[in-house]
Amino acid sequence: MRTQVPLDATTMESLLTAAVAAPSIHNTQPWRFRMDSHSQMLEVHSAPERTLPLTDPTHRAQYLSVGAAVFNLRLAAVHLGWRPEVRLLPDPHAPGLLATVRLTGPLGADDQPPDPGLYEAIPRRHTSRMPFTGRPVPEPIVAEMASAAHAAGARLHVPDIAGTRRLLRLTAAAEARNHAHSARTAETRTWVTAPGSAVSYGIPLTALGPPDAGRRIPMRDFTGALPAVVRRPALWFERHVQLALIWTAHDRRDDWLRAGQALQYVLLTATAHGLRTSFLHQAMEWPDLRAATSLPRHKRCHPQALIRFGYGPDGAGTPRAPGLGAVRPAAPPESGTTG
Image (cartoon, one colour):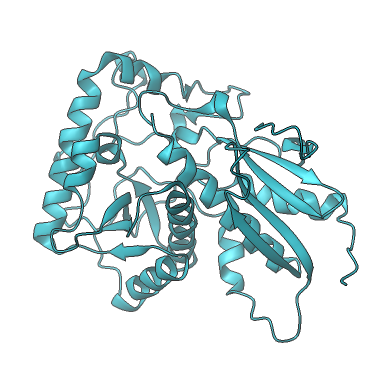
């Protein structure tokens, strides 16, 4: 029987700081963490109050976000010398408990830790909504991104020119729908924060990018319903857009969590190689358009995330809730609370 080594406050802070650095839709940070001091296990729960009922009615994007946080937890645990054991959806009677990460003991001599550059990329990864240079990303880096997605239980597809245009058209159609849907626009606007705000959630105006003057890339218009004075002037975005579609063979809740881990693995791999990334998620928010983004020759292709990648300016950081303050003592097993 292994002897449990108590986790000190510094270790907990490091784990949670890494976890909350994960990307989330509209920076909602839709997770809560609970520490079970008896089993040295971190529980990752959904945060029902930080959901998007119109944009994400099935909570699929929320699960992707939580999956990305779980990947960061795993990476931080290994970096600190622990062996993490992850279980997805461990309790059918607690639907809000999305994952557990139990630290089973110190890493052994035969354990192979991941590239340390991935852990170092966690605080450097930011969504960049600025124009990229259009410089092609070398094929070995793209192959490494694809291998990262596969290792986490998903697939990554980089389309050709025709496929890229198709995905951009679908994204533009979704953005037009969003813009015409007043209730969705209002929902999105509630997650835009003013400069100097002390709110630790949402997207500050300073992190929003300009519209594409050439209308080649349908970037999400977070400020469309706000006064023109807060809108940034249009800039010319790259002519040759580089996209990657992350997809899974099934579309269940655990697949969403795996896709979120794969997404973060891909984003950190890109960041470690000096790439910038952003999300083109609009089409994923409409069932018919999401289905249309699937690969034509794959019968079991369920699109989960569409990312833009390339070389360009770093993205502005977004606020995060404090790491250690997000931890609560675990509820007794019989309570079934979801947090």
